[in-house]
Image (cartoon, rainbow, N blue to C red; front, top):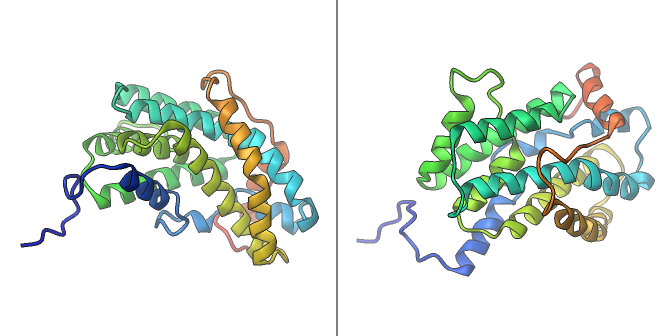
Length: 246
């Protein structure tokens, strides 16, 4: 009888299978709620601060600042989840608490934490990964004050567990996060499909450069300075009407 139950032993692990899994994890269709967040962009558009003509410059700056932070923490998560890593609940909590401290806007911090928890739950719905279950419990336990599992370290952790390469995981995370924000811009301003596709296409070199910079950077060395976007996130709850949660 054919066994169709999701199991790690259902297929032999191969480069093709690993690549397909990475494509799925980085797919905007993954049910984690990412399409509901603009991370402050909606406020900037509503105030006329961000327009279609300024998107290329804005996103290059975003990748260099916020993207750099997330790339570093994605790598940190990957190193905990990889076969050579030594996962501990204490270190996992420390990483996520550190990232919370680097996100001053409550709305952005909450959105990142929501996506991270939803991401781990989505991966665990595909197959049984004990380490990811342990990470979920360590990050959301009753003894936790912040109860935050951020998206970038969660993505890296899952990729490490799945045997996906560190650089590939980091680039995939950057690509899907930027593609998601560009998609938000399509719903907020006159940005067509071809314009959005060209924008993401042209931003790929910046993603590669940031991923390369993040390779030698530790979480205690990275920082982000995007006060305007933080302001946009903080102002977002006061928008009426609004399309996004954040």
